[in-house]
Amino acid sequence: MELIQVDIVGLSTSPTSGGAYALVLGEIEGNRRLPIIIGAFEAQAIALELEKIQPPRPMTHDLLRDLFEAVGAEVLSVVIDELRDGTFYAKIRFVHNGRERQLDARPSDAVALAVRVDAPIFVAPAVMEEAGIPTEEGTGFPLSSESVEEEPQE
Amino acid sequence: MELIQVDIVGLSTSPTSGGAYALVLGEIEGNRRLPIIIGAFEAQAIALELEKIQPPRPMTHDLLRDLFEAVGAEVLSVVIDELRDGTFYAKIRFVHNGRERQLDARPSDAVALAVRVDAPIFVAPAVMEEAGIPTEEGTGFPLSSESVEEEPQE
Image (cartoon, rainbow over all chains, first blue to last red; front, side, top):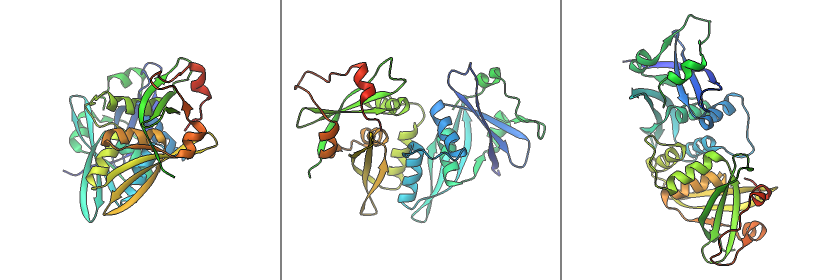
């Protein structure tokens, strides 16, 4: 079961989403996209880093990155590995004291960390098969305000 | 210069605060109180733990606590040690691999972690002298919507 590497292809909200955002992950070698509903704070945490905005003080996910660095733990990857009862689950994989470890996390926290440490983002095939949306290459993700609310939430 | 131990004595907002909250720390051996303006997300992170509400999935500060645990790092205390240009600065002090370390953090993140690991919260005397508000014992903190917006922010 080979994991599917993805990139962030979108981060969007709609007036009817109640403050939630859709984080859209796209297959690097493929055309499926995976939308995950995340909170406004977590969306901001991802957006600040994508836009290379450096807040004057460390935000919460910067502190998380700083802790990994301070204890000499290297983040290997993050993996969205499960979708259960409409909730996505993720793992942060890292090496500490020469041993490979993982931490349970919400996909939004995992991705907000991944963009800060340049770690690859993976999705388990079963998750992509269940929640991935095929798109024609280059047409972008057909996100409407309706579809945002119908997607599984983390 | 002995640090002043404090407890959380309040967490409040007002209709005119623009979504910000006042985190009020009170001296354990004394009657001064230190209000710090924090964001809504950080306030929620503190409140969830104070109310002993366990969200179904780890929130961001739970993940931070989980990482400390996973790498065998013990949080000793958090210290609000500086107030500069209206911004409060804090440190998270911890032991990792037998060595004492510290991480720069915003007071809100530091306190949200402290309540999760039962670590004491300290304030540097200079910070308390500059921003602390004396109150009569037992009368509570005289927080008005006006005072919230005039306090230094983190």
